Length: 284
Image 1 (cartoon, rainbow, N blue to C red):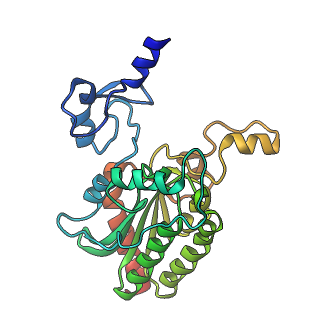
Image 2: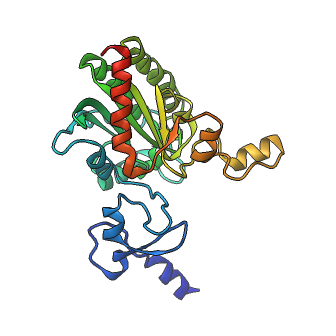
Image 3: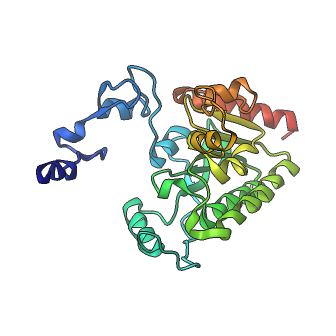
Protein backbone atom coordinates (compact mmCIF):
# COMPACT_ATOMS: atom_id res chain seq x y z
CA UNK A 1 0.00 0.00 0.00
CA UNK A 2 2.83 2.38 0.77
CA UNK A 3 4.33 1.69 -2.67
CA UNK A 4 0.97 2.36 -4.30
CA UNK A 5 0.72 5.73 -2.54
CA UNK A 6 4.24 6.60 -3.74
CA UNK A 7 3.29 5.94 -7.37
CA UNK A 8 0.13 8.02 -7.00
CA UNK A 9 2.23 10.94 -5.83
CA UNK A 10 4.54 10.74 -8.84
CA UNK A 11 2.06 12.09 -11.35
CA UNK A 12 3.59 13.16 -14.66
CA UNK A 13 3.59 16.89 -15.14
CA UNK A 14 1.55 18.32 -18.01
CA UNK A 15 3.08 21.74 -18.49
CA UNK A 16 3.63 22.76 -22.09
CA UNK A 17 7.25 23.68 -21.34
CA UNK A 18 8.10 20.43 -19.57
CA UNK A 19 11.05 18.73 -21.35
CA UNK A 20 10.82 15.45 -19.42
CA UNK A 21 9.64 12.27 -21.20
CA UNK A 22 6.51 12.20 -19.01
CA UNK A 23 5.58 15.69 -20.19
CA UNK A 24 6.21 15.07 -23.90
CA UNK A 25 3.18 12.85 -24.45
CA UNK A 26 -0.52 13.18 -23.64
CA UNK A 27 -3.25 10.56 -23.82
CA UNK A 28 -6.43 11.70 -25.54
CA UNK A 29 -9.31 11.25 -23.07
CA UNK A 30 -11.68 10.34 -25.91
CA UNK A 31 -9.81 7.84 -28.11
CA UNK A 32 -6.84 7.18 -25.76
CA UNK A 33 -4.31 7.84 -28.53
CA UNK A 34 -0.84 8.90 -27.39
CA UNK A 35 -0.28 12.43 -28.68
CA UNK A 36 2.99 14.31 -28.89
CA UNK A 37 2.38 17.41 -26.78
CA UNK A 38 3.91 19.86 -29.26
CA UNK A 39 1.71 18.47 -32.03
CA UNK A 40 -1.36 18.83 -29.81
CA UNK A 41 -0.51 22.46 -29.04
CA UNK A 42 0.18 23.21 -32.72
CA UNK A 43 -3.20 21.65 -33.57
CA UNK A 44 -5.01 24.07 -31.20
CA UNK A 45 -5.37 21.37 -28.52
CA UNK A 46 -7.47 19.18 -30.81
CA UNK A 47 -6.69 15.45 -31.04
CA UNK A 48 -5.32 14.65 -34.48
CA UNK A 49 -6.75 11.13 -34.29
CA UNK A 50 -10.38 11.64 -33.28
CA UNK A 51 -10.93 15.42 -33.25
CA UNK A 52 -11.59 15.64 -29.52
CA UNK A 53 -11.33 19.24 -28.33
CA UNK A 54 -9.18 19.49 -25.20
CA UNK A 55 -9.67 22.41 -22.84
CA UNK A 56 -7.52 25.28 -24.04
CA UNK A 57 -5.34 27.63 -21.96
CA UNK A 58 -6.45 31.25 -21.90
CA UNK A 59 -3.26 32.61 -23.51
CA UNK A 60 -3.52 30.13 -26.38
CA UNK A 61 -7.17 31.00 -26.86
CA UNK A 62 -6.40 34.72 -27.11
CA UNK A 63 -3.55 34.07 -29.54
CA UNK A 64 -5.93 32.00 -31.66
CA UNK A 65 -8.68 34.63 -31.85
CA UNK A 66 -6.93 38.02 -31.71
CA UNK A 67 -4.91 39.31 -34.65
CA UNK A 68 -1.20 39.17 -33.85
CA UNK A 69 -0.07 41.95 -31.53
CA UNK A 70 -3.49 43.57 -31.16
CA UNK A 71 -4.66 42.30 -27.75
CA UNK A 72 -4.53 44.98 -25.03
CA UNK A 73 -5.58 43.71 -21.56
CA UNK A 74 -8.33 45.46 -19.62
CA UNK A 75 -8.78 43.04 -16.73
CA UNK A 76 -6.48 42.31 -13.81
CA UNK A 77 -7.04 45.38 -11.64
CA UNK A 78 -9.98 44.02 -9.64
CA UNK A 79 -9.20 41.38 -7.04
CA UNK A 80 -11.61 39.07 -5.18
CA UNK A 81 -12.15 39.32 -1.43
CA UNK A 82 -13.25 36.74 1.10
CA UNK A 83 -16.23 38.72 2.36
CA UNK A 84 -17.80 35.71 4.08
CA UNK A 85 -14.67 34.30 5.70
CA UNK A 86 -15.61 31.05 3.98
CA UNK A 87 -13.95 27.81 5.09
CA UNK A 88 -14.52 24.29 3.74
CA UNK A 89 -11.54 21.91 3.66
CA UNK A 90 -9.37 25.01 3.71
CA UNK A 91 -10.00 28.76 4.01
CA UNK A 92 -11.15 30.38 0.78
CA UNK A 93 -8.50 33.10 1.17
CA UNK A 94 -5.72 30.49 1.21
CA UNK A 95 -7.18 28.54 -1.71
CA UNK A 96 -7.53 31.75 -3.69
CA UNK A 97 -3.96 32.89 -3.00
CA UNK A 98 -2.56 29.55 -4.15
CA UNK A 99 -4.53 29.58 -7.40
CA UNK A 100 -3.66 33.23 -8.09
CA UNK A 101 0.04 32.48 -7.69
CA UNK A 102 -0.15 29.52 -10.05
CA UNK A 103 -2.30 31.27 -12.66
CA UNK A 104 -0.50 34.63 -12.35
CA UNK A 105 -3.84 36.45 -12.55
CA UNK A 106 -6.33 37.60 -9.90
CA UNK A 107 -9.33 35.62 -11.10
CA UNK A 108 -10.86 33.30 -13.68
CA UNK A 109 -11.11 35.71 -16.61
CA UNK A 110 -9.00 37.77 -18.98
CA UNK A 111 -10.55 40.58 -20.99
CA UNK A 112 -9.24 43.24 -23.32
CA UNK A 113 -9.41 45.03 -26.64
CA UNK A 114 -8.34 43.28 -29.82
CA UNK A 115 -8.76 43.13 -33.54
CA UNK A 116 -10.38 40.00 -34.94
CA UNK A 117 -9.70 39.72 -38.64
CA UNK A 118 -9.29 43.49 -38.61
CA UNK A 119 -12.55 44.18 -36.78
CA UNK A 120 -12.46 45.91 -33.37
CA UNK A 121 -13.73 43.66 -30.59
CA UNK A 122 -13.82 43.41 -26.85
CA UNK A 123 -12.66 39.89 -26.00
CA UNK A 124 -13.29 38.11 -22.69
CA UNK A 125 -11.98 34.58 -22.09
CA UNK A 126 -12.79 32.53 -19.01
CA UNK A 127 -10.19 30.27 -17.38
CA UNK A 128 -11.55 26.89 -16.29
CA UNK A 129 -8.24 26.05 -14.62
CA UNK A 130 -8.85 28.86 -12.10
CA UNK A 131 -11.24 27.33 -9.54
CA UNK A 132 -13.23 25.66 -12.29
CA UNK A 133 -13.85 28.98 -14.03
CA UNK A 134 -16.37 29.75 -11.31
CA UNK A 135 -18.12 33.11 -11.49
CA UNK A 136 -17.53 35.20 -8.40
CA UNK A 137 -17.80 38.93 -7.94
CA UNK A 138 -14.66 39.65 -10.00
CA UNK A 139 -15.67 37.56 -13.01
CA UNK A 140 -19.08 39.23 -13.07
CA UNK A 141 -17.51 42.68 -12.70
CA UNK A 142 -15.01 42.06 -15.50
CA UNK A 143 -17.74 40.83 -17.87
CA UNK A 144 -19.84 43.89 -17.05
CA UNK A 145 -16.89 46.25 -17.53
CA UNK A 146 -15.98 44.61 -20.85
CA UNK A 147 -19.55 45.04 -22.08
CA UNK A 148 -19.71 48.67 -20.92
CA UNK A 149 -16.36 49.51 -22.50
CA UNK A 150 -17.38 47.78 -25.72
CA UNK A 151 -20.37 50.14 -25.82
CA UNK A 152 -18.16 53.18 -25.16
CA UNK A 153 -15.70 52.22 -27.90
CA UNK A 154 -18.34 50.79 -30.26
CA UNK A 155 -16.77 47.35 -30.33
CA UNK A 156 -18.39 43.98 -30.81
CA UNK A 157 -18.17 41.77 -27.72
CA UNK A 158 -16.94 38.18 -27.89
CA UNK A 159 -17.07 36.10 -24.70
CA UNK A 160 -15.54 32.62 -24.53
CA UNK A 161 -17.25 30.84 -21.65
CA UNK A 162 -15.79 27.94 -19.66
CA UNK A 163 -17.21 27.57 -16.18
CA UNK A 164 -18.48 25.26 -13.49
CA UNK A 165 -21.01 27.93 -12.49
CA UNK A 166 -21.31 30.34 -9.59
CA UNK A 167 -18.52 30.40 -6.96
CA UNK A 168 -20.01 28.92 -3.82
CA UNK A 169 -17.36 30.49 -1.57
CA UNK A 170 -18.83 33.93 -2.31
CA UNK A 171 -22.45 32.97 -1.66
CA UNK A 172 -25.10 35.51 -2.69
CA UNK A 173 -22.40 37.88 -3.95
CA UNK A 174 -21.69 35.34 -6.66
CA UNK A 175 -25.35 34.85 -7.58
CA UNK A 176 -25.80 38.61 -7.95
CA UNK A 177 -23.38 38.54 -10.89
CA UNK A 178 -26.03 36.86 -13.03
CA UNK A 179 -28.17 39.99 -12.87
CA UNK A 180 -25.21 42.36 -13.21
CA UNK A 181 -23.88 40.73 -16.37
CA UNK A 182 -27.35 40.48 -17.90
CA UNK A 183 -27.96 44.20 -17.46
CA UNK A 184 -24.53 45.07 -18.90
CA UNK A 185 -25.09 42.86 -21.95
CA UNK A 186 -28.43 44.57 -22.57
CA UNK A 187 -26.58 47.84 -23.21
CA UNK A 188 -24.96 46.27 -26.27
CA UNK A 189 -28.37 45.33 -27.64
CA UNK A 190 -29.65 48.86 -27.10
CA UNK A 191 -26.71 50.25 -29.09
CA UNK A 192 -27.07 47.51 -31.73
CA UNK A 193 -23.55 46.28 -31.17
CA UNK A 194 -22.88 42.58 -31.82
CA UNK A 195 -22.45 40.17 -28.94
CA UNK A 196 -21.27 36.67 -29.83
CA UNK A 197 -21.02 34.00 -27.16
CA UNK A 198 -18.73 30.98 -27.57
CA UNK A 199 -19.56 28.04 -25.30
CA UNK A 200 -16.67 25.69 -24.57
CA UNK A 201 -16.31 22.62 -22.40
CA UNK A 202 -17.77 22.96 -19.83
CA UNK A 203 -20.24 25.84 -19.62
CA UNK A 204 -22.61 25.24 -16.73
CA UNK A 205 -24.57 26.70 -13.82
CA UNK A 206 -25.08 30.42 -13.36
CA UNK A 207 -22.87 31.29 -16.33
CA UNK A 208 -25.14 29.30 -18.65
CA UNK A 209 -28.16 30.91 -16.97
CA UNK A 210 -26.90 34.45 -17.60
CA UNK A 211 -24.50 36.10 -20.05
CA UNK A 212 -23.30 32.93 -21.81
CA UNK A 213 -26.66 32.29 -23.46
CA UNK A 214 -27.61 35.89 -24.22
CA UNK A 215 -25.53 36.25 -27.38
CA UNK A 216 -27.01 37.55 -30.62
CA UNK A 217 -25.34 34.44 -31.98
CA UNK A 218 -24.33 31.51 -29.78
CA UNK A 219 -21.59 29.22 -31.04
CA UNK A 220 -20.30 26.09 -29.33
CA UNK A 221 -17.24 23.91 -29.70
CA UNK A 222 -17.67 20.24 -30.63
CA UNK A 223 -18.52 17.99 -27.69
CA UNK A 224 -18.79 20.84 -25.19
CA UNK A 225 -20.83 20.14 -22.05
CA UNK A 226 -23.45 22.90 -21.82
CA UNK A 227 -26.04 22.82 -19.06
CA UNK A 228 -27.35 24.37 -15.87
CA UNK A 229 -27.37 21.32 -13.60
CA UNK A 230 -25.40 18.14 -14.18
CA UNK A 231 -27.01 15.01 -15.67
CA UNK A 232 -26.94 13.09 -12.40
CA UNK A 233 -28.78 15.88 -10.56
CA UNK A 234 -31.43 16.07 -13.28
CA UNK A 235 -31.89 12.32 -13.43
CA UNK A 236 -32.30 12.08 -9.67
CA UNK A 237 -34.78 14.96 -9.74
CA UNK A 238 -37.10 13.83 -12.53
CA UNK A 239 -36.59 10.08 -11.97
CA UNK A 240 -36.29 9.38 -15.70
CA UNK A 241 -33.63 8.06 -18.02
CA UNK A 242 -32.08 10.78 -20.15
CA UNK A 243 -30.96 10.65 -23.81
CA UNK A 244 -27.28 9.99 -24.37
CA UNK A 245 -25.32 13.20 -24.81
CA UNK A 246 -28.35 15.38 -24.09
CA UNK A 247 -26.19 18.16 -22.64
CA UNK A 248 -23.56 18.17 -25.35
CA UNK A 249 -23.22 20.88 -27.99
CA UNK A 250 -24.47 18.73 -30.87
CA UNK A 251 -27.70 17.79 -29.05
CA UNK A 252 -28.33 21.44 -28.13
CA UNK A 253 -27.81 22.42 -31.77
CA UNK A 254 -30.51 19.97 -32.86
CA UNK A 255 -32.85 21.46 -30.25
CA UNK A 256 -32.15 25.05 -31.28
CA UNK A 257 -30.37 26.15 -28.10
CA UNK A 258 -27.14 27.06 -29.91
CA UNK A 259 -26.81 28.45 -33.41
CA UNK A 260 -23.88 26.35 -34.61
CA UNK A 261 -21.17 23.96 -33.49
CA UNK A 262 -17.88 25.17 -34.91
CA UNK A 263 -14.56 23.27 -34.90
CA UNK A 264 -11.82 25.26 -33.22
CA UNK A 265 -9.74 25.67 -36.37
CA UNK A 266 -12.70 27.42 -38.05
CA UNK A 267 -13.78 29.53 -35.08
CA UNK A 268 -11.93 32.77 -35.82
CA UNK A 269 -13.13 32.91 -39.41
CA UNK A 270 -16.70 32.15 -38.34
CA UNK A 271 -16.62 34.85 -35.67
CA UNK A 272 -15.30 37.38 -38.18
CA UNK A 273 -18.11 36.55 -40.60
CA UNK A 274 -20.81 36.69 -37.93
CA UNK A 275 -19.61 40.02 -36.52
CA UNK A 276 -19.37 41.57 -39.99
CA UNK A 277 -22.91 40.41 -40.83
CA UNK A 278 -24.34 41.67 -37.55
CA UNK A 279 -22.66 45.04 -38.01
CA UNK A 280 -23.90 45.41 -41.57
CA UNK A 281 -27.42 44.41 -40.51
CA UNK A 282 -27.46 47.02 -37.75
CA UNK A 283 -26.07 49.76 -39.98
CA UNK A 284 -22.88 49.92 -37.87
